[in-house]
Image (cartoon, rainbow, N blue to C red; front, side, top):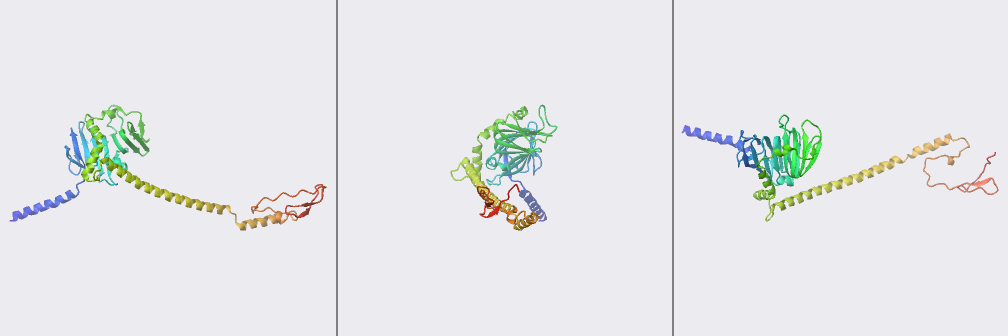
Length: 357
């Protein structure tokens, strides 16, 4: 009886110990489609050999040997081919078909090829590959990042970050700037420099050598990427009845564009309102600044009158700071014959003084 009680208690303790492990298990990000050579994975579990059909989760780090290669199909329909001599980590992955979907990876060494799924096509801002030197973003892309750490370059290789784009556009970014890489082009950031990324006239030869004999698997999957995305969407129940995968993508693009457009229009209206208010306020202040104070005007008039010679300038003839409403009419000409009387602009007569006196 005592032995049975001890066994029951032991089983209960084992079950309780298993609960936290289950609760902390990371959500699956994808599945292993193909493995060749020496490939190990480490994460929540100790390091072990990666096998076809196994799940990969957030936090897992894949290490491939000189002959190792692993291909992953991701939950959003993406495809990742991790090439030999590579260390690759899944940092974050969420593919619920919502606006906060994201795919974030770290390429700590080596090369891979990435064909993006619906995250890269619907939410390209949520996809990135981090390296110790730079960050790579995409806009619906099939691309091949490479990071060569210092001391690991072979032959004609140069340490640094590289990316080669087969389809779409990639963005290579470091602290000095960003360069857009169109399809058919590649870019680099050599190690030990602080300059911005730059486009290359032609891909370096060692980028081509990083490809393997299993490249055809990635290319084949990339040609059918829309069908793979549609299958994933159907499996998730995200498609409407009779809706195709490309229609789902277009519907969500239109919804996001409408939401962004509404937000942009509202922001633009608010900006225009603020600019009008600023112009009105600035105009009023400018008018107030340009308007002299009446008290200062009067004081200036009194000062000028005091400084005028006695009898030499009458008050109405003293200069004034008040702006004249209109120009004074020219005086009437003197009467013919050199008379002494003349008429001023106000119709008043005054005695003219001969210049020879």
